[in-house]
Image 1: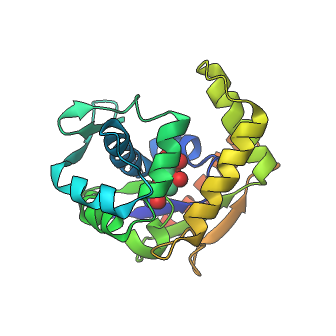
Image 2: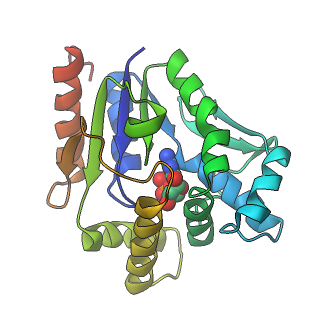
Length: 227
Ligand code: DC
């Protein structure tokens, strides 16, 4: 199976770019953030504190997470049998996901689920530790980044479109906090794998970013243009 590991900080454009790249290549797009978000949401719903391992770890035995793909190969995430794909897209759940993600037991809990998908499908897998930990033998590793201000501006636009009242300053602050959490945790921190290609999208349009990654993939896999 072929795999593309796509890692990078919040708002680098991973989701949109990975989804479109997967479509062009005929690969399955796997958004691993949805897994951490689901655990974060479960803990919040139970009234727990997502940053306290003593509250999060025991709840793992009550959590079952599944990724399902519909006919259009769109990912839906199921938490204890319920589709939570849309409910996990709030700023509170984003922060909770980052907090539970720093707990080693949570990362261990989600490891085989992620690896199994890549064993059975050609994937573009997006996350923080895909190239370093989940798929260390990925066929192609990409580390996608952009300046914090540009990433916050993109995320702010997305939230505004959904009617979320967060200000740009709040979004920037949250993003810096999550970047810090994600890159300073002891286990599988967000870091560029030594063999990953760095792509900075600060001054690239979405289309240009996707084209750049597609070219990298073509060069790696010698695929014909399938568009
Ligand atoms: O990609 P995202 O914004 O949906 O991820 C939400 C949080 O989940 C992110 O801040 C850190 C955590 N996460 C992680 O620790 N490892 C991953 N592979 C994906 C996400």
